[in-house]
Amino acid sequence: MVHDLYILMITAGVVSLLFKWLKQPVVLGYIVAGILVGPNLAGENLVNPENVKAWGEIGVLFVLFCIGLEFRLKKMFESGKTAFVGVATIVVGMLLLGYGVGRVSGLDNMNSMFLAAMLCMSSTTIVMKAVDEAGWSKERFVQGATSILILEDIIAVVLMVLLSNIATSNSFDALVMLKTVGVLAVTLVVWFVVGILVIPTIIRKARGYLNDETLIILALGLCMGMVLTAEEAGFSSALGAFVMGMILAETLESHRIEKLMSPLKNVFAAIFFVSVGMMINPTSLVTYWPSILLVAVVVIVGMITFGTLGCWWGGETLKDAMCTGFSFVQIGEFSFIIATLGNQLGVIDPAIYPIIVAASVLTTFLTPYIMKTGVPCYNFLYKHAPQGMRDRIDQREAKVAQLEQQTGTTSSEARMQNHHQKMNKVLAHTFITKRVVNLFIKNMTENDQQTPDKDEK
Image 1 (cartoon, rainbow, N blue to C red):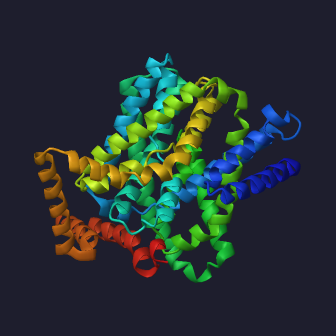
Image 2 (image 1 turned 135 degrees about the horizontal axis):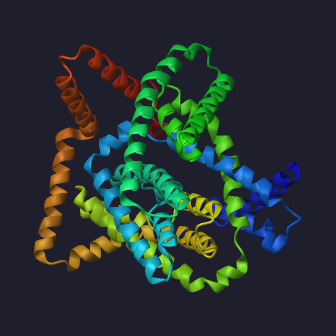
Image 3 (image 1 turned 30 degrees about the horizontal axis):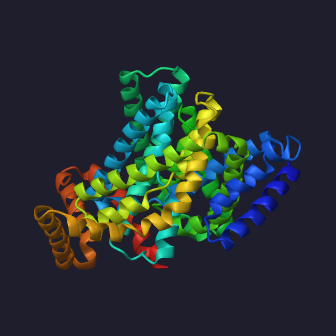
């Protein structure tokens, strides 16, 4: 196993340096490294695929745990209608489009469902990197786009649970699926509410005894505990890791935990993406290149269309909506995880995996260039739009600008305060319930008040 780890890490390190020099995402470098050391090029004896698979499964848990740590429930609520309408439009639209493409291409029902799930998730990492490199971190559309990406991650975890159940039963029963969704929703609410009420309180009281060593051990112990809890409840281990990350994100030590987890996340994420690359046969890329191009075009056109419509319907200006849609034009990390899940369950066509990975590489490479065309496309559309449409665009721009002028930088805080006031008013005559709710709100917001936000560092 040490030999395998050495081969993986040294190859990934060298190839990632090359990709950094080429100014390409290192994720692509890891996938290429996996192709180079994989059995299709290097043979069966260089690296043991079973060892890599085991490391990759651990990597998935750490990646999802760290994604959960970046989740902020308060920030999601601050984006309000934009995030929820936007993600609903994107996910529903891409699921229908992906399923339709699968059926038209001759795939069966199961393969089409997995394909649809893979196509509806953008990459938080790639989008944020592209935004930073373009110098757009302070642009108005970024907060809404970030909230949509976070909600997509949550939906991806839910889709993994549903797809696992469908694959295990080998059938699709609407009533069974509704029951599964209901049980999952109740379970998540219970886990999250209990976690927010208990864990931040315990960590706050033990804060004086938590050095870096004890904190990271405690965080990983809680993560593994939730992983086991999820498995015992009949859900995937990935769900448990993600939920515990979300819970710890609401503690005073969230940024510290995130910082301590960063090296582990980077190492195991690299191993996971290398394991993804090892499953690709380079000759299949030549064989399936028309399908790869088709998937890439479907993702780019679909994400631009549904991303723009969703954000527009959610109250964004057309310019911000188009900037958001044009930044979501890649297949994300969760697509690899869903594809790996389908492979492990043995329910998807082996050809789908290399097609998805190759399409992801292509769309990731194109993302920075497509994203920069968002504003020119908006200017072209506005210039050639009918007068009635331009009037609607101008009215939306004026409305958003007026709201910003009235509330300044505290508009999000004002919305949160309004929610809190309504909640306290409803619960004013129920002392015990009110105390519980106040504790929940305190644990959700205290870390934002006492710990500098990651974006402000």
